[in-house]
Length: 125
Image (cartoon, rainbow, N blue to C red; front, side, top):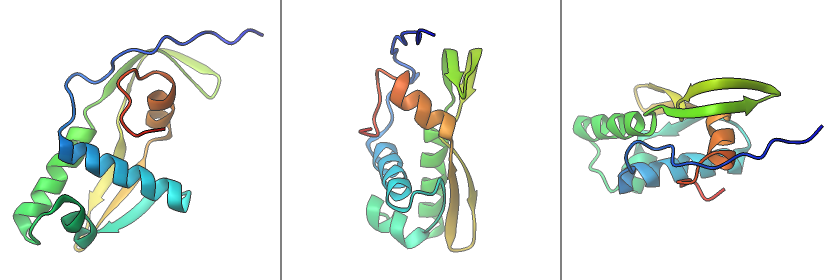
């Protein structure tokens, strides 16, 4: 069976902010380091990474950046696990804000789309 050629396209509606890019790359590198798509990261780690003061406003900033990363990608003719979907909307991750940490679960579909469908890829895969 011939593998269908995938034409990479720009999938981001708008470019991500520098801080969102930094956060995405840090989350991705954490995944690569521990080989686990689900991770729990302390706020202190985010504060240091993003040069934020440890306060409630900074936690709101982190949540805002995660929402920016979760702007859905619309991927046409998306093939994943041998199933093709005409139009698939994919988010970067699911996350939950806890008392002292953020639990993040990366989307394997997003990583697949990032690697195979995105012309505007940003994770350095």
